[in-house]
Image (cartoon, rainbow, N blue to C red; front, side, top):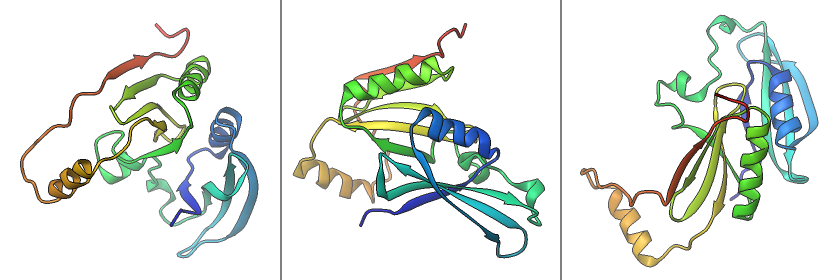
Amino acid sequence: MPYHHLALAARDIHAIHAFYEGLLGFELVKVEIGPLPGGGWGKHFFYRMDGDDERFIAFWELHDTPTQEQHVFDLNAAAHMPRGTNHLSFQVATVDELHAWRKRWNEAGLDVLEIDHNWCHSVYTFDPNGNFVEFCCTTGQFSAEDREQALRALDEREFNPSPPPVLRKEWPAVGAG
């Protein structure tokens, strides 16, 4: 079952809008405004991805909540996880499209990490909330052996690393030292 939307709180909705619509091209199509359970009120902004009226990413701009001073907007900082563990990943169709995104992000002043994982190829950067955002292209297929290994990993207690990535490269922002 595909998802309808992913919703996250926003530290600065204007920076989020500039990133997700201005840079990524997701289109703001709907805002709902209303009270929040437990107090306060919020604006819920919905961004359509690739013109698809079935898939959205949404952001909350929260106001007057009882815990407002304690809000943490970076998913990993909030969960006390290593940076990048929780992240957003969006599909692209080709590796050439992936490289175009890497270049666009660099030219927009963002650092980019590129990894070819052997079965998918990805570029990563951070959004204005500090969340890792990935664009990913599946480049391989899965075998029955992959499935069996994945099922075994559910119960394995040993560290058994995957093969190293084919490529891991950091691309500093254009003009960065």
